Image 1 (tube, rainbow, N blue to C red):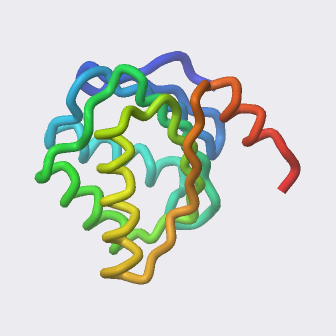
Image 2: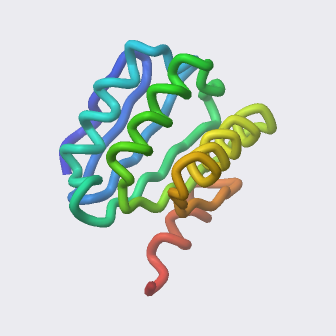
Length: 129
């Protein structure tokens, strides 16, 4: 596992096919391409990956960034499970907007769950499949 890395004000670390992403503030359109490259580096197009997104200090995606993520989901169709942590109501709404749009427009199902704490998400992720 590498130490913490930065994309703009956001930080992350990886371990194999696992990404811990911690957004701080707004995710601007210029932050999205390096994030999507990171997903590809984890193998999102070829193997199952897991993302733990700690949204406690983040803000919802704006429309341009949402479109970029949605375009990626349409094209890459990653085999991913996303554990959202500490999502405030506006963030949950945007999460569901993206997930619902991918389902309705492309027939793509993003497996996901919302958790109150990082520890709760980690316990869930450690359970046998």
